[in-house]
Structures are given as C-alpha cells and as structure tokens.
Length: 282
Image 1 (cartoon, one colour):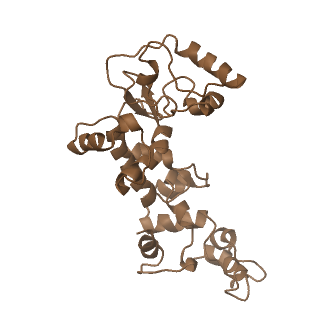
Image 2 (cartoon, one colour):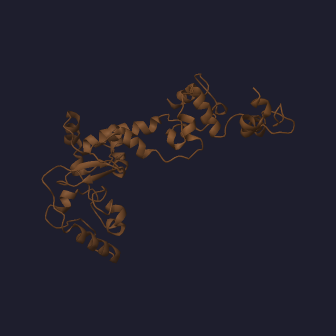
C-alpha cells in the first residue's frame, strides 16, 4: 500500500523509483506540526487499530468475541503470552501487550485486569522497570494485582534466595503498598496524557509518532489559502530537496551548478527563490 501511495504522490503513476521521491516517506508521514506532510503511516495506524482490539480484551468488553477469547485463551489466568498452539491472530495481539501497557496507565479498582509487574498502576510507574532487582527474582511475572494483594499482604512468587538489592526493593515496595486497598469496581484504563478513560486510536497514533524536526516557516507553509499542491511544493522546498542546478550537479545530473541567468552565481534554493534578479523581475 505504501509503495502505491508513494508512487501516486511523487509521480502520479503506478510505480516510481527512489529518484522520484524528493523527501523520505517517513518524514512525509509525520504530522505537519512536526515538520511532516501529515500523511498517515499505514503500519502505525494498523497497530493502533489492533491495540484497540487488545484494549477491549484487557478491559473485558461485553462483545461476544471478547467473551469467546476469554473462554478460549483465559488471558486473565495464563497471561498475554504467545504460544505455538494459539491462533496467529491471538499471538499478534499478545505481542502488542508491552506496547499497550507503555501507552496506558491504570486507576486501580479490583485489580483483576491489571498486571502487577508490567502495568503502570503505582507512583513508581511499571514495577518491572522501577524495581529491576526484585523483578529479576520473580518466578511468576504475569500475576495480577488482585492475586498479589488479595490476602491483605503482598504475596509474590520469588526465588528463595534474594540478593540484598532485591530485599531492599521489596522493602520499599511493601511500605508503598501497605495502605493499598482493592475496591469493588473494575480497573479503569487511561491513555498517557488523557483526562478521560477509554482508548482512542487517534491518541494512540499521536503517542506512537516520534517527535519530528522544527522546520522554519511552519505557519507560513500551512496557514494560508494557497492550493494544496503549492503548499506541498513549499514543504519540499523547506526540506532542502528542491531540484535546483546545485542539487542536480551534486548528483551528476547536470554539468554546472551555475544559474543560467547570473554569471558565476550558484543556483541554490536561496539564490533561485530569493536572490536571483532575473527571477525577481518576473
């Protein structure tokens, strides 16, 4: 799909070569405010849609297919782990669990859908990152918060011989959780930076897109009434990839980088669009 989109965008044809692509496609897929063109990255968008399916499974949505998954795979008991005996579709979803947990946090309720080590439900953040020594001694990593705290005290399955670092971290954790009480309500998931619960694919897409570059002339590029093809051309210009004679000469496409109107002046972007007196006279 991306190959067809790139070909249509850069060349208006079914196929194109690397020479036809004036700016890297990953940069074109960044939001406009991050120096991109605002084209949706289909791979990232597809991941966001899969994450929404996973969210329904984790939060036990009442859909029939969610109930079937819980009966078939029992993720609340076995954890979200890949297995050769599972279907490929379920294994694909389970592989996305670390990403899902990285972009969500939990408002603790009964602890049934919150994984003790991997979810962000304490002030420490995910405990497998905050307490690595204690986590390294864990023999059952997929335990839920309900399983760990249901007895009233912290109950974890650990190797019998703990290192001093692990003992210290467990002491800190025990003190932190001494006042934690499970409530008789479901856990509530929030996306990073969101003030309301639920899962939005648009928010997930924003969280998964890395910050871009701060190109000059950002507002001037898009906050105008110019035709879209003119805005796109100016965006390519801002990225420094307009095919001036200097650009083409550096790649061996023309014999000289000089401006045909100005003797001894190299035809760069600045010269062509700002300094060339012949162009200004039009």
